[in-house]
Length: 326
Ligand code: DAH
Image 1 (tube, protein in one colour):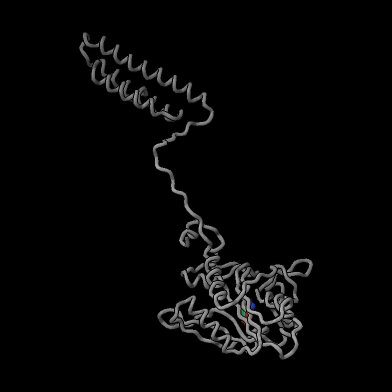
Image 2 (cartoon, rainbow, N blue to C red):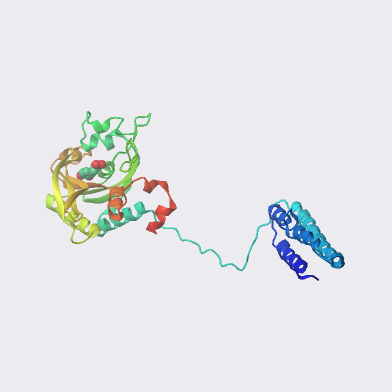
């Protein structure tokens, strides 16, 4: 057989075996039998041959043409009879390795903080997210006209309950039910009707701490918080206790750590000695107990530690973000 026709037949044979769809089949038809197709071009070549060669060459081309045409019609029937497209499955390919899941970066930071306090003897406790005004404000010595009670700072339910705006509520719940000594931390979600942006979310996480006993001093508070901050941020971390005001503690402080090369200060938590009015609200006898409390935001700490600049990353569940913490 003439080499040109033999090659085209061979090529068509291989191509027909690789066809998996009607679209592929149509492309193959055009490639061989279309206006500029390989078979069509061979036919054009016929005219250039000497008359005695034409007959044999013509028969050969015709054979190739019939071969391709019948191949196409067989395949077409086959492809049309299977209603779902056939998928190519290569059982020799290596499998895709399964990926293990990982803890969310907020959970990681939260657990790490809790672990530091449990090592110091604090117990982890839980409290409800739907709360009363008494537990979120009144018992915490927050006056009736305090702006944080307004509906633009707290989510209220129609039944006059609210979504807790701080985990300080758990201080009250624990003291209502337990006699000192108390040494607890309470991690959990809190809610505030803030407009969402790079540093605000309507829901975030706090960790509250409370220690109540006899003869508790402000230096005990400083000792515990210094130890905590050095465990979390490194043993050389510098801290600063800056006077502040919270209704439920007296005196109150905000605690900063030195941050960055230009020795700026960054606020990390709020704290103070438990205000006698809080003990009164939970029914403790006056003057018998002393204590200290503190509260911190988990997102803020996770952002600082990982260099995250937008709080919304935590809630969008984008795997490209989350996989960096596995
Ligand atoms: N509840 C405060 C807040 O949400 C944080 C806080 C400050 C808690 C001082 C405390 C504390 O227990 O003593 O901003």
